Structure formats: structure tokens, C-alpha cells
Length: 497
Ligand code: ADP
Image 1 (cartoon, rainbow, N blue to C red):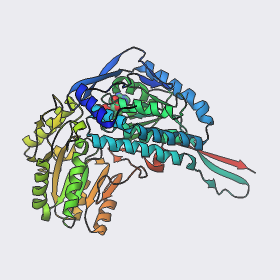
Image 2: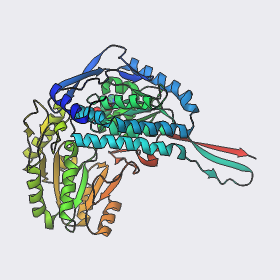
Image 3: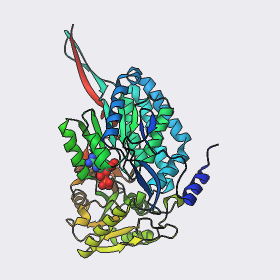
Image 4: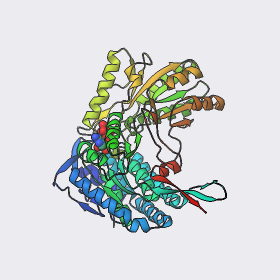
């Protein structure tokens, strides 16, 4: 009998680790050690302690994975009908649900996120496989109106070997949305999870293989970005790269991909505005703001990290917000506090540097602002939920992505100023607005440059809703049918009759 959720949590909290976590890459349908034999450590952000080791991949492992993925592309996977591909994805969704507790506890231990959030990510991964299971046989082309002497059509073909470079903030759900879409389209895929969070991607590959995926169709190479990641994105056998991560690394990936003319989709950072207008439902907006910035300790590319607040309600709104934020409880993710740790010591330092610079520049710290040391958390990496009133719209605290539990407040006088404030950074990932006036909300949605706009519910949507950024936030769309098309190449066929 497999252990219950309570037993898994107790094991992780009492022993500091989980038994049976994989330690190798997943290549060709099996776990394999790194060719060099090298391994690296994985840390529990909630305690700062090492809890497992995993394979440190390099160019040799990448070569093997790309070779297996390329072979799988021409074998049984190519002969499978779209409906058969869909059935395997559907079975993967079932297996994710069957193994949800283990996946969620492993994800919470590895990433530091609160268990309730990890559980939601597991549900979302299952939904993603279910969605693309249904989409596999609905990838249609069009017929071309060329006149009586020709028949013309387009068909969508799989792009080939598709690489997923996965970040540490949403390891399982980001891997799932790329892998499921790529497989639905008929591609084979190689995922490179972040070195901070390798385990859920490895467990996902094992489940997909158990669901009937042919060997080599879904491979996982673990290791650092500099070694395993760079070798993958520069490999001439790779046909497409989906990268989710920071702007500097995204630029690097794009440059490496350019050398082989490999297609890329980049989902990069954000500094997303959340406008709260005077006519909104205040309680709903307060809940929305708190979730938008403190979920996953603010480590979300689409976090609502800039509150754009209408002046006439600003004093009362900020008072209530500061009161609520001061009561948030920090702790180990597996204990389900209000806010968990951040991913690493270096991330904690980075957040601290941003806040110190904001303080030194004369921005007012309204809540938090310091490293925290909750009880029961050893040397874990925690930062207090923080609110900073911005001195000016061009201050770095408004312009720069922090990727931590730090909310910046910008005060505006009306909708036009809210739109200007929303558009005042180089990023354009998401934007949100809370208002009872739907005309104002839609005018804001039209005028703001963002891949997606949320009205009266930040993070609204599901796997059906395409997701991606503009400008420095990247390009290309994941999720939905748009996400499926990322993994296709269009072929036009014309015949003279
Ligand atoms: P962070 O700086 O927060 O770790 P990154 O954007 O560097 O975020 O990392 C996102 C993902 O990109 C991780 O899987 C990481 O290993 C990978 N990565 C980092 N550098 C490179 C690179 N040069 N080439 C390919 N992947 C990389």
C-alpha cells in the first residue's frame, strides 16, 4: 500500500527527505546516471538543508537524450494516430491524479511552496494532460480557395524534437504544459528542470512512460543551466525550444538557438500592474492583491507586483492591506503557512538588495522589509511580506522584477493615469484591474500592453486560456490551442488537377 498524504508529510518533516526519489536522468524510458557519474545537491528551502542528490548532466547526457528523442520521432510515436496519442496523454492525467499526494509533497519539499499550492499545481498538471489529450485529434488545417484547377490545403506537422527549459517556481505545471502540448502535436520532447527543483519533472516522465508513452518520447536531463541547459539549447538536433525563466538567460538562449536557426518561445519576467479603482468591491480587491503578490512567496513571473491604486481610496485601502499583510504567517511549505520560503539563499539576498536600495532611495516601507526567521524552520530562506510606497514611477523598485514577496504601490488619480502607470515598465506579461465599471475595465484591458488582462480576479483562467508575454516579457504562447500550435510546423500542399 502506498503511504497516505499524512504519512508522506510526516516522513518529509521528520526525516528531512522522501524515500525513493529518482536520482538519474530519464532517457529512453529509464532512469540513467550521468555519463560522467556527477551528481549535485538539492535543498529544502524551508530548512536550508540538503535533502537529496540528482544527476548533474552535461553535453554527453544531452547528446544521448537528443539522439533518443530523434529516434523516437521516427518510430512507433510517428505511427500512432492522433487519437492514440490522446489516449496516452489521458492515461498520464489519470496517473498524475493517482499519484497526486506523492507528487505534491515532493514538489513542496523541493520548491518550498505551500503544500496547498503544490496540490493545486498537481491538479493543474493533470488538467493540462487531460486538455491536450482531447486536443490531439483536433489539430486541423484549412483548404485553400485556388480555383477549379487546383486543390490546396494546409496540414499541421509536429515540429520535431522540442526542448522545455523549466524554471524553479512552477516546476511541475510548467513542464506539464510544454510536454503535454508537444506530445499532443506528435513531437518528442526533452525537459531540463531547474537545478533547484528536478524531482517533479522526473516523476512526471516516469508516469507518462507507465501510461504507454514510447521510450524516448519524453526525456528529462537534469543539471545546471550552464552545463545541461546550454548544451540542450545549442544542440543542432533540437527543433524547438520553450524557455521559461529570466530575461538575461532568455536572451542567452535566443542567441544560442540562433546559431542553428532553432525556433524559440520565451516566457520571461514581469512587473505586472494590478489597478484598483475607487469603484471596486474593496474586500474582493484586497483578497486579490494579497493573492497576486504573496502566492508562492511572490516568485511568479505573472505576480501582481505593482499595485496601481486610485487616490480617493488609497489611505483606507493601504491601511487595511498593511493590517492584513502584517498578520500573514511564514513557515515551512509542508506546514501550510500563509507564505512559504523563497527558493534559495541567493534569491533571498537578491530580494534583500532590492529592498535595501529602495529604502536608501527614499521609498517608504509600509510593511515587512526584512529577512525573517520563523520557528521550526532551521536555516530556511524567508522574507517578510513587504509593501513599499513608490517614490516615483521610474524608481528601480517600480521598474525591476524582484521575484519575491514585495509589493510596490503607485498612486494615480484616474483611469488614464492608471493605464499610464500600468504601461510604465519594459515588461508586458499580465495586468489586472478591479472595478465595478466594466467599461472602464475593458478600456484598461485594451490600452494596456500585456499578454493577458484579468478583470476582477487576478490569475483567472485555466489551461484553455493562452498565456505569454510581449516586449521584455517574451513572445510565443503556451496553453490553449495556441500552445499546441507552438509545437507544429505548417505545411502547404497544392496539387494541379
Ligand atoms: P534563475 O536566474 O532564477 O535561476 P534562469 O532563467 O537562469 O533563472 O533559469 C531558468 C531555467 O533556465 C533553469 O532551468 C536553468 O537551469 C536554465 N538555464 C540557465 N542558464 C541557461 C543557459 N545558459 N542555457 C539554457 N538554460 C539555462
